[in-house]
Length: 209
Image (cartoon, rainbow, N blue to C red; front, side, top):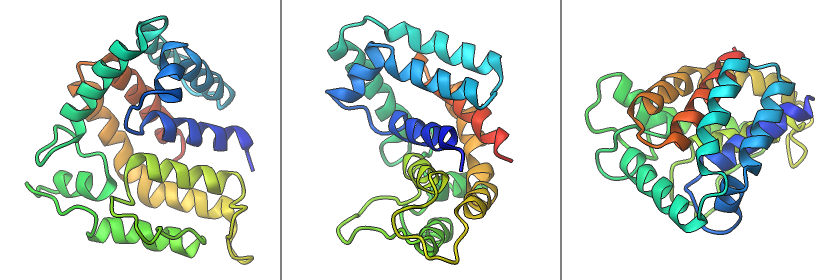
């Protein structure tokens, strides 16, 4: 399996997680996150324009004070994704419900999130007993795809082809919502981090189809 593809999924999973002090914000202000994602994107032959737009957006934070950068990105993450009526839904089930006209999406347990959980279970990946958040957050789906891209080495049953399962998950899930999600984030975010990340993520996801 393409290890660069697995690396790309894992890097995007980290980038889309809630911003935290320590290694996460240090990767942003040091430029490491931008460089690693740009290198993986170039290796996957993604659009140079998308890579350039992403790199330019994240260069805003290089050399910045980590605490100030973290505060700015956290504030925007809260505005965009958190609360009873977020600007943009960042889980598959809630985003698709909104796209289908549901004003107040049901979180965690809906037909889309159940389909994601069932797909993961078929590949040997199960929700931890005390996990009480959305299984279909973008970062979780990218983590899962990174696992499959690396061959599903943890506990995939012998009759599961990880490459085929990865393509099926991309077709059935990622491509159904991530490009639209990224378009909304790019249009609605006031923070370069999320605008740039959305450009690159949207380009990457479209290339999977």
